[in-house]
Length: 281
Image (tube, rainbow, N blue to C red; front, top):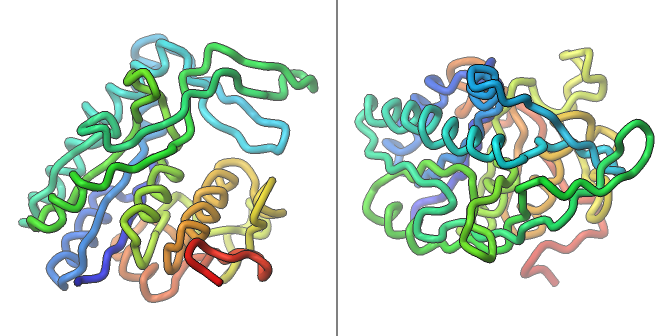
């Protein structure tokens, strides 16, 4: 069977989504199966500004930051991802002769999640419980629709939201969604393409790129988990623990980004030496 790569197209406005579509098309023509997972943080913020919905973030005690998804924000997230970002990616792939199908995690029950009843966050130096956050953590990927599309020669283009226990939508992190999809499908590669060269030892210095970054198996993923990179490293850890062959965080801002990442550009993520992936001894 042809190798399978899951590509996460970051939502940073600097990420070259059109270039990533070009790269994905080249991979498909070369015989590789690809699932494209996307977020859309810039588009969510832009649409939220137009609709007067503020964009806020919650920072957990371990320093990991995530979007605060109240009811209005959940509507914005769904509109931005399903109504703006996804159609552009699907059209971009089809412009290159690659048939693509856009899916949210709600379609066919693709992504199932456990709703977070409360979110622990640090506000003004105090840890509080936030209860109006409509987000969740993925518990299951129902792969049937993905394998059917892949077997038929399509590129699935996947994004949040996911379906909670009650069937209603919840926001989930797109990097972690990509990791869950990669693990469930047994992907050989997961590429997280973002608006940075990879994992930086110093976030202010683009020349401090790490060729390799080890993440701990539990708790905070490591000393380089800062800002938006923290959730990417959490996602990378989850993918590796699920048995994904290799995970790379790489620059998605320039044409040819995907090919360079496959050739070794960016930062390869590894588990600390004592970790045992799923299926290991």
